[in-house]
Image 1 (cartoon, one colour):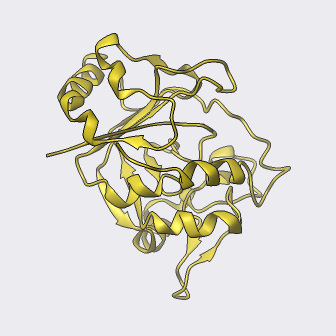
Image 2 (cartoon, helix red, strand yellow; image 1 turned 90 degrees about the vertical axis):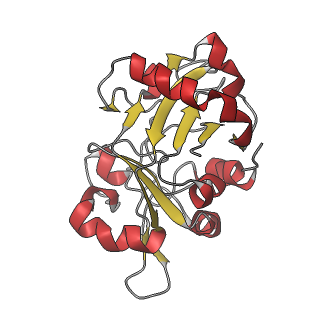
Length: 219
């Protein structure tokens, strides 16, 4: 049976999830979700009360159906041909290229962290997630997060960590609600938390994401 994972996005800066170039990926942060989710599951990120653009609680920032689950090594190996834009280029003028989430280079065997939005203090947690989740069937609203209907509010919470098992009664209802919106798949908004990555080329939001990942409990 497919599952619905929900969590609150404390920092929605376009890196995790990464909604650019017609795909949505989750390859850093949220290690418990990445190591557990299977193809056909849904992952939904909910807004924070303290979002940069205001209170986004009880709003949906993004939802992705997991189409592929790849080991981080496979994600890195396939990236040059399939997703070159996911290999971070911190010197690019294109924000989406600076936010690339394929941040671990496995070409020499042992992973080496590329210059990216994460620093050395994030490496152990990021690698513990084991997998990258990839989707072409997603809705990303960013700062234009949409209100979750009242009958689906039980999937929302402002705690750290994520929900999965307790969302079981709402899975079909959640997917049906999304499809009834009659929206095109893809990026429908812009990240809420805009960071000047040119000023912080090797790390940005690292500490905040580290704290979030360390509290990645499930319920």
